[in-house]
Length: 564
Image (cartoon, rainbow, N blue to C red; front, top):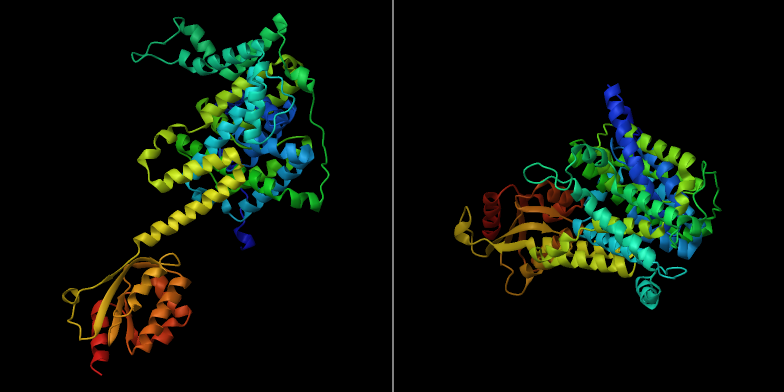
């Protein structure tokens, strides 16, 4: 790749052109709102991942700032994401927190490389059924991991394996803590019902509020914050005997994160290759999917390669301050757009708002009940999954169903890396089968030819793509009794693609016909097949007189050879 083609231009640069006070006020309002929304999610994601709550908050602050300042989208909000929970938990369980930090840094480097080499456009080639399958699989795993705190079960540490988790949960089902369960159920009901409170009736009147002023005052309040405030107040005022952030982690530190240098060695990096690849791949997919969702809402276009580089920088820097993997987050990005964001300034304000909250109000997080955070994550898992796609499976082909279900099951039972790898292999196999089934070789009847062929001359038309998955169909041309006495014409006008395996099959047909004293004549070849045949010397071996422009010239050439 030419160095001059490298491009590093954050969306912030263009967004600030013509920037004024009105846009700034919109961005500040949106940033403050998203900052409030991000606080409980950041803590919940970190705790569910097996890290301390401050790891999620510091990630939201640092990574959120860098992704907004350097990214290729004007409105995307970056930070810790629910999709990473099962990945991070597995890495910490197997390699420890130090392994997670190294994997995140290496994944960040890989994302930067992907952006530099313009791989952002490649991500869109991942088939939709694979994305649906692993997204729903991750949602199931997130929900499963939260049942411990949701029911207040007496489990010291949840295993990372799906079946082991189910076994441990069933074995400890008798240890349900009624108070924790009550808080979790009440929180979950509030999370699902809060948006419906402000939904209007068909006639435009508020569904549940008779007091318009009160409705306008409460409507901007995000439901996770409401759950956090009410549940924490209940624990503090009534002294409820439930596990909290303070009892498990000792609270959230009130101050700036300190720089930490994780122990990095080449041996450790090699061991962490698979987790690194998983974090990078998932981060790229999630961030670019999120950016596309934002584009659909705003009508703008993001720069996928710039976005990958920004994600990479964020994931390289954040671990040095105790952070975790970060990517684009759809829920916070949509909130950012709907509250009036016009530029990356809103994302920067969201990070600064979180920083102020940590510096001023960190001690208040001590009494946050983990049951409430579990309810928030169950709500996230429900919204994250595309459950309606399972109901629609019968409307699609068997190949589509196999891709969705296999990727889903492999994500749940094994891990995301295996699911995506197997899914991509299956998608390739299905694609090869589909394209090869579209490739046809049909004999052209003599009356359909522009000229009447001489005795011993036959003509065929090839439709589709002659590649490694379809070359078996060429064998029928040289079966006993199929080889003509004088010449065989192959019409290539509707042959859209030819690879080297297909060319080798043509070469085999040519040699077989030569042995039987029969000539091969090609006509109407398109640019790509013709170019390949010329570059490999096949046309020279065939003879330039035997590769003509159209079917008329081909029949004339065949009749001339037959007359000799």
